[in-house]
Length: 347
Ligand code: PEP
Ligand code: MN
Image 1 (cartoon, rainbow, N blue to C red):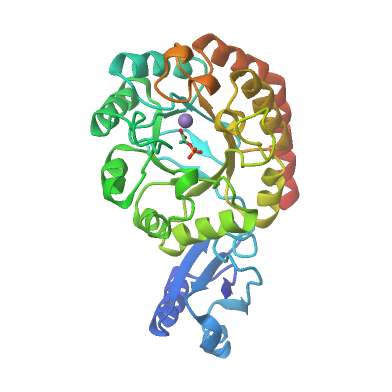
Image 2: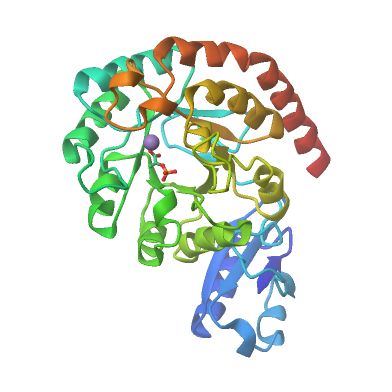
């Protein structure tokens, strides 16, 4: 259920509605919009008598949300969610494409600094590096752990890049939250419901990657888990799905971008590195992702991809990353124009 407040409703009236919802044993989620505040209700709302809320001061209407996902849906919030980062001009979902770049794994301070300096110089706003790696083999490199987190904290200080890194389990989540500006939940954990709930209680935005065999609805329901716990700062990420093709590691499903944008207000980012698994396909698919209207890109970069501890085959080298940023320019101009047109159309 969704309570739509009147445009001129006061903060006290919003609060009184939230209290009424809580006293019915349900959870209110107040999401202020440009025109009005909407309050989502989660829990078993079927038992409430609509009049109980409808007649409260400041309420415009109480509506049933028809989709299984509530807080994620555009019915709940018509305007796009923009994820802002305190103290930084960077955002996800706004009028600038979010460029998230870095190595699959932090291997050393020197490697990480070299990449960070280069991607910052080429225009990335976010540095993404793995500290804890979810690997298919238990014998493969698992990441440097907290040492990698400390290196990334230094990178934030030195280059002004925001740090994105993965939490692979509930045990390491608090540590990752302490260091990161944004917490990645990886494809293999998209339906790890206890981790999703814990991410929902974290105070940092979440980057939620699509599972390798997840449908759009499953991705949105995973985001709903995070939001249902009170963390509304979620960006989705298309990183390729498992299909029968064998010319790429995964099949990058770019059609999910407009599909998400139709159903949800959450931003969606595209990862053509994991989405293709092949370096020579990353730049063309990055262009396509911008053309299709993604809110950002995640690109794996390594100074010497042949020697990378993980995902070398899909990592761009430093020169290739700079070239990609150049190649994207005409697409970025069109991207910006279409953002302005869309914003005007929703007013
Ligand atoms: C990664 O980002 O390096 C990673 C392991 O991604 P995914 O969860 O999409 O496989
Ligand atoms: Mn990787």
